[in-house]
Image (cartoon, rainbow, N blue to C red; front, side, top):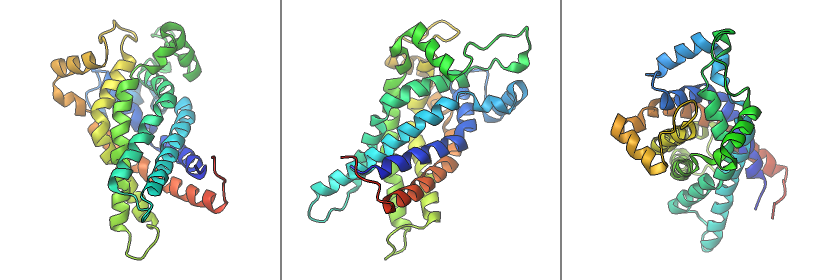
Length: 296
């Protein structure tokens, strides 16, 4: 097991957060708060009430946790591919099924680390009481990521940090399987014959399209995840669990609600994953050439 992929994935993931966080905030608010009716209305309302800072609420913890989760995703993916190549001892080539299953493993592996940071991110992003409300306005429940983390543990227990973990796994497993399969397929198709590595335009384009493909698969579960994470915060608890949330959401708002944030997910995914894959490939190449040693 080689450490270069884990380190490169960590750096690539952190860069992706910095690029995509403002649109991620808009996405979460549209998914969970009915008074936001669209991307532009949410964007302008956030600017008016909270300023630019409103788009970066809850970013500190995700930068740290997503560095770790991206490390797990890319490291698990590449090392699973390596294991599959050993199984195909005759030619060592990875099949599309190998790529799909390795991406699935990478997506599911990260949940244990990702869920606590993700629930803090969502809670802070949906906290719309801003500093511009004045002294007489409602005060935010959470003062920052650490205070939010400790408050969730105090009020809901440690398991509260894992609310929405099931739809998160159902989102990220298939999403990353589709993500990596799309990326590898496009890179293979667009790389010139005889060229060992794709050039950077191919890497960035393939990464952007792969991100959009992954979110196209994962958006319905992303909606359910966000709703379960916010359930009972500032209002009466509405959902008894995962299946109840799915059925109630579909019954009251129709099936289209599961794709309400697809547009913004894809809009955000293209530049974010261009950056993630470009940084990952650069860092992986540097680290491998520097002979970063194996983990096992």
